Image 1 (cartoon, rainbow, N blue to C red):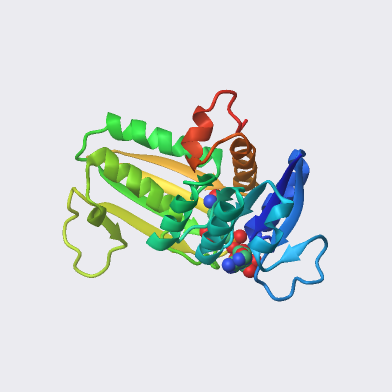
Image 2 (cartoon, rainbow, N blue to C red):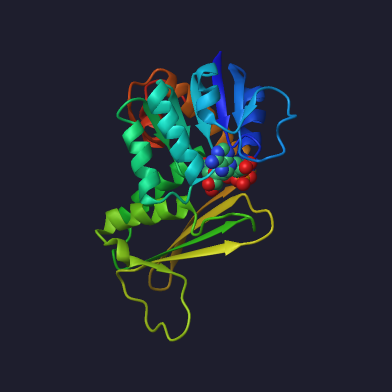
Amino acid sequence: MIRLVLVGAAGRMGRAVEAAAVTAGGFEIAARVDTRPDLAGGNGVWSEDVGAVLARGDVVVEFSGPRGARDAAAACAARGAALVSGSTGLAAEDDAALRAAAQQVAVFRASNFSLGVAALRIALRAALEAVPTTWDVEIVERHHRLKKDSPSGTALALADDIGKARSLPGSALRHGRQGAAGPRPAAEVGVHAVRGGSWVGDHLVLLAGEGEWLELRHVAQDRAAFAHGALAAARFVTTAGPGWYTMEDMLRAPGRAAR
Ligand code: NAD
């Protein structure tokens, strides 16, 4: 039985992880952490302070926001607990706090825990090798109207993959276009964030040549897709030493913990 401490437990992803843990079996929710002020009467152990309840669990699973990710990283490093972190929109100092924690404990980071997106990234790398470098690449992502960060962490990860495959600088990203934008430069990756309704997560990568184009698309229909990936990551870190782990490490691992 893996004892989880859920940070951001009252949020959409926190609730999805809890529901998935019940379905999957082998997990116990040891404590729930959230800064929402109306949670004191909830079932089980609730706290606003991850440090105060960390001793109850083996692994912290965090879907809260930049501050929650930073605090969880510091608490895990101080008390020797493994961390699975999924918040997006992190600033450089948040990322630095997570990487510092990875010197002491296992830290599993993913801007998208779905296996389908992991497969999309592999397929994209293969497609970029197969088509001429003159083909234009654009990313279109759609998320629900309440999403805080734009573009999504997944869109940025896809853009990073494209930049590496094409040896482009970070400045090659073009976030939307307006006005007299002129002809599209070849060394550009367009990123377009659509917001509305209740879309859980939709990422489309377009590779456009002369008279033809290719579309690679992943649609998350339900947060369960991320939640089950996060639980697989929680299983993975229980046997991992200190370090920084990603979906690729899990997919490459013998026995494929994600299955
Ligand atoms: P949400 O707003 O529904 O939930 C976030 C919860 O975290 C809220 O209940 C909030 O009160 C709580 N919270 C905020 N700051 C906190 C802190 N410092 N400590 C403890 N709790 C805190 O958001 P959501 O849709 O559940 O998404 C949460 C994060 O996860 C976002 O950054 C989102 O982009 C990201 N996300 C990642 C994946 C992935 O696969 N990696 C998938 C979906 C969402």
